[in-house]
Amino acid sequence: MRSQSTESANRNRDVTINIRAHQAQRDLIDRAAEALGKNRSDFMLETACREAEAVLLDRRLFMLDDEKFKQFVDLLDAPPSTNENLRQLLATKAPWD
Image 1: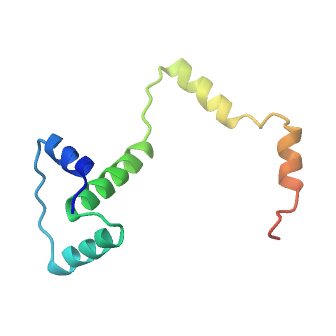
Image 2: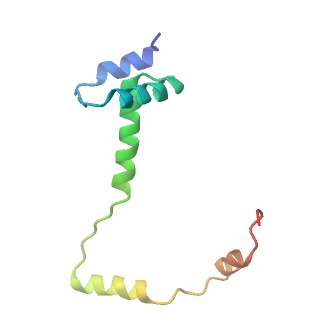
Image 3: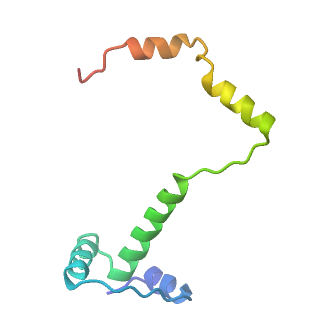
């Protein structure tokens, strides 16, 4: 039985996405969706959106003029500033060691 919020969310969807798959792939998706108490469409949409966000967050593009790019590279190439807290943290033995 579907909840009212699921039915409401489905009514608001106005675009169809079609995808072809092998039977084994569909069965796998169905088992995973069932394990989470979701239907195939909700499971696939949530999973695809989560992966799409991860892909886009991994990509960064920023444009710099020649002067700003040189400043950026100089900062990257410069030795790190002294950070006593970081030095102590890196010298501290991890609790699981």
